[in-house]
Each structure stands twice: as C-alpha cells, then as structure tokens.
Length: 276
Ligand SMILES: Cc1cc2nc3c(=O)[nH]c(=O)nc-3n(C[C@H](O)[C@H](O)[C@H](O)COP(=O)(O)OP(=O)(O)OC[C@H]3O[C@@H](n4cnc5c(N)ncnc54)[C@H](O)[C@@H]3O)c2cc1C
Image 1 (cartoon, rainbow, N blue to C red):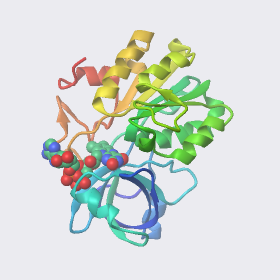
Image 2: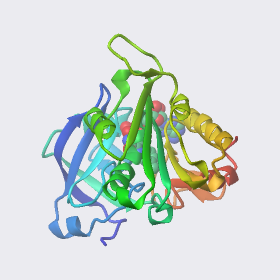
Image 3: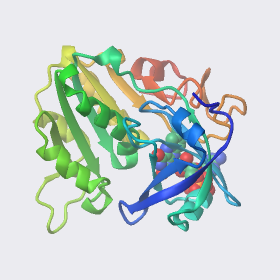
C-alpha cells in the first residue's frame, strides 16, 4: 500500500464524455511501483491536482478489480474541473489517495442489494455496483434504481444498457422531465421503489445523489421498513486537506474526509447538521 498522503503524478489515459457537462477520465499513476501499490475500495476518493488550477476531491468511479488504471467521473463546475476538462489524453495531474472509508462489502454478504442513485450520485456507486455484480453469487439479489433530471443527464449510458440486460440484475431508470424519444419512467427516483419487490428485512440500500434526493429517498426507505443501519450513503462537503486537519468538511464531530465519506443513516442522523 502506498502512502496515500503523498502526491503522485498520474497521466490521463482516456477521456470519455458522459453528458454535456460530465466526463470520465481514466488515469494511471506514472510510477509502476506506486501503480501496483495503489489499492482502493468502492466509496474511497482522491484529491486531484490540476497544476496551476488547484486541488479538489473526486470519488473513484471504477472498480479496482483487475486493472491498474482508475476512473474519475467529473462534472464541470469551477476552477479545477474546468481546467481538467481542457486536458486531453497524456495530460498529467497530481493525485493524493486513496482517501476516506469505503462501502461495506463483506458485511452485506447474503443480502438483497439495492442501489438508488440520482444524477452524478451514480459516480461513487458505480465501483460498488461493479464489484457486487462481479461477485453476484455472494448476494441474494441486485437492484439498481437510477434517475436524472432529463435523459441528457443520464451518465454511463452504455453501462446502464448492459445492466438492464444482465442476468441477475434489475436496473430501472427514470427522468424527472420526459421528452420526445424517452419511453421510460417519468418521475423522481423514489417512484421506482414502488416498482420493485424488496425483501426489506434482508436488504441493504446504497443511496447517493443530491442532498434533497437523499433526504426523500431515505424517508421512503424508512417508511418501507429499512433500518437506520441498512441505509448507506456518501456525503459531499466542501473539502480542502482530505486528511482531517483543516476542518472544512466537519459535520458535528465528524470529518467527512476521514470518518466518511460513507455513512449509515444512523450516523448521519447523529451528525447535527443533518435534519430529517
Ligand atoms: C468526497 C467527495 C467526492 C466527490 N466526488 C466527486 C465526483 O466524483 N465527481 C464530481 O464531479 N464532483 C465530486 N465532488 C465535488 C467536487 O469536489 C466539487 O465540485 C469541487 O468543488 C470542484 O472543484 P472546482 O475547483 O472545479 O469548483 P469550485 O471552483 O470549487 O466551485 C464549485 C462550486 O462550489 C462553489 N463553492 C466553492 N467553494 C465554496 C465554499 N467554500 N462554500 C460554498 N460554495 C463554494 C462554487 O461557487 C461553485 O458553484 C466530490 C466532493 C467530495 C467532498
């Protein structure tokens, strides 16, 4: 395991536009020894430096299984992300990480696994979906519910199609606002919960999306009988150091960067900023 706090140089191997404002960048650490030592788990993130622009946190959006590259899927919103979107294959960036905790995996073995993603909330869920699917014999069932504002905002379109066709996985999509050509469900992602049968006492839900979406989906899941420990999410907060020193990302007595970003609903409730 390499020292996650030391910045390392990585090169962009591939640039894949996802939507009009999001792109998946496939990165590889330049140093082969560091590359081998860069082991991470779904839910973890890196601090990415774009030289001359700054540093920002991004979750690792690909499973680390069997590859020595990793994906960051990024929405263009400001200084660092604008500069990154100007870069192409071969461009060099700095990476600190992997940082933070990760989604439970062994702990949820044997359970029905439900993923609920909204918008770019699918980024942190994707490596967990990939890992759970790869080891699907260890889980009772896999369901992915994903919603975006419009069809143009759906990320990972090729993969969504694969997930919809894959045996052993249920994947339902929705958009908030329908348009010509969209024949799927229209409505917020929570409406998809009514369309699937879930053995709630033996299920765990991984939820990620904008705060308002998380709030409503958590309410829906609680109403269905999901326990507070059976709802897991990742939180985004303005973050600087990524290692629990600067306190930018503190909520109550927790650092999102160090204690999270993955939290159960029980933990989120205990954090003073989160109101039901
Ligand atoms: C753990 C974690 C994982 C993340 N994963 C991803 C990911 O996978 N993909 C992704 O696209 N994004 C992700 N983000 C969000 C990303 O880090 C931010 O969008 C980051 O600010 C982008 O940097 P920037 O320099 O491009 O934008 P900035 O220039 O920082 O601006 C981004 C937006 O935030 C506002 N802003 C900036 N600083 C503050 C502040 N202190 N208070 C209030 N508003 C402020 C700006 O006005 C602007 O609207 C993640 C964040 C965290 C904490």
